[in-house]
Length: 401
Image (cartoon, rainbow, N blue to C red; front, side):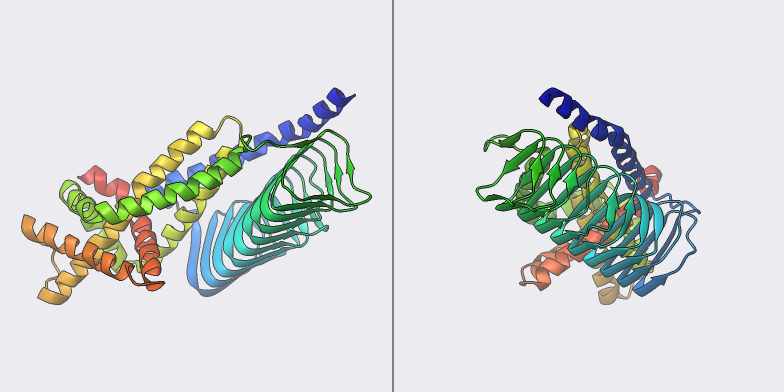
């Protein structure tokens, strides 16, 4: 009897695994498109302080602002980032949204990826999978999910049914809905409310499991041993350690890196510097979008069974591009300092000047980077501006030599 139940629980997950693969491939395609600098004529984007986007989006679209209000009908993918993002009455293929406060109402989506400080999925429908991460995440009962759900955050409450598998890693988890497949829950406190119905197995890691009266677990209930981590948990812990090592390496070798890149690919440095100088908003906007898409791609690949090698490859590419992006910003700052000091608008021709000014730009970032709070902001801005410039024109600059 148990084997029959487990097989029935696995079948919904298999049906929706294809949708997750399509989402990963779509995000990868976007990342490759941005990296090559080929912004297709059918891709639209807006960057500003406040955006109110109406029903006029037939193509893939990107939006970045302090406040973003979406109310659109699109047959393609929509990407949005801002301090506050409100999505109301919107339909799209894939919706990728990031911000401080995110709310979704009356949506009709194929897939959803959301990351923010507060994420509220209030009502609407996602035909396939949901991936969400944030400080506080609420998925209300009126929000319908057609596939599986992967959720990570500080405090997570799920009242919406999940017909396939559910994975949650958070500080505090409350599940009060039906799950058609397995439920894998990891947190300091895990609570199953009276409306919880788990059709598959309950796999949990917590010292504080609360099962309220009325909750039903059809399959097995098993506490995961300390060494049995899910791919999502391994990725989260490894990403933190990797970020720390990356920061130390960047501080130690940043100046040498700028010198090496300025000497090895002067065409790339000149092109990215001109791009940042003439189109700063576009550079920052594209940098934000690339920075948002890449982590989603890595998380989705790690969450899949066969995608771990590809996830490691994408992570390696991101690590390789990151120092180049910051070096591009250092080169831009150095050339601006040269322009202010010498009143010269033409690029330097001698090797001494071509190497000296980028080093001064790197020193500026390092010095400002030591200031609390402001320094962190300076590193983030240097990364985003450089990332947008490298992603937009890096391929053409390298091809031109």
